[in-house]
Amino acid sequence: MPRLLGVTVRDLEGKVALVTGGGRGIGRAIALNLARRGSHVVVCYLRKREAAEETCRLAEDEAVKAVAIRANVGDEAHIDKLFSEIDAMFGRLDIFVSNAATGVIRGLEGLDAHAWRWTMDANARALFLAAKRAAPLMSEGARIVALSSGGSERVLPGYMIVGASKAAIETICRYLAVELGPRGITVNVVSPGVVDTGALEHFPQREQMLREGIQKTPTGRLTTPQDVAEAVDYLTSQDARAVNGHTLVIDGGASLLA
Image 1 (cartoon, one colour):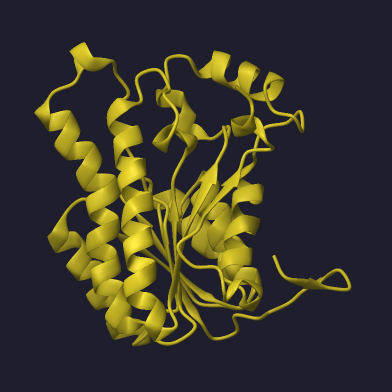
Image 2 (cartoon, one colour; image 1 turned 90 degrees about the vertical axis):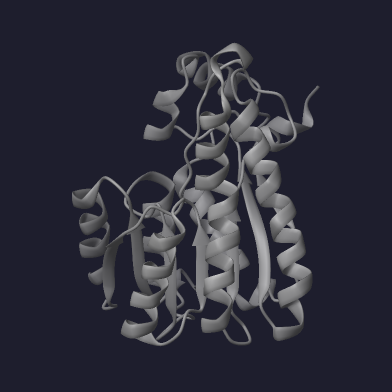
């Protein structure tokens, strides 16, 4: 996060940020960094209410307002309600971080049309619908950041539908960057390497991914939630005001290798 002589800069004082999937892991790290910079935080969650409320308690230690709102981002009615509540509480939105994600991790034979709809709705469609609702609440200087993964470009076992949804997220962000750029709103993507969070438990080859993730990364370590949060900090800072429509890969150089 922005620092001056080792002290966190509260450059977002009075701003309002929404982080979907903000209760745990990467989402929590992002939400807390934004709070440390002075931003009020809306933590959107689906199932883990206690985790989301814990994120809010930690954020409020930074003298900001934090609120947990339950919403299924794959459901348009839930998205409408989420943004209506944000509008009623704050009347504005300065930062939208689309972090919530899910998906079916299976090979072709284990996939069906339902798996496709579920994954694409919760990931790509959710970003599209949320950005459409977020934009009217945003003004010049606002930021949208979406989370993707290396599976948008590279083939990972069982990752077909999720990878397709991540590729769609990156494409949507490029179009949003061009459409919203004239209003002073930038739209970017953060694409982390392997991060050891609860989400990785859904991968049958989890242990192999962790082991190979370290072995195949030039820096010799996995990407952490804090690494991701600090990338979001950069993209939501004034230092990144000219960065728009970009996918920032933070994987320690793992994707550079054949």
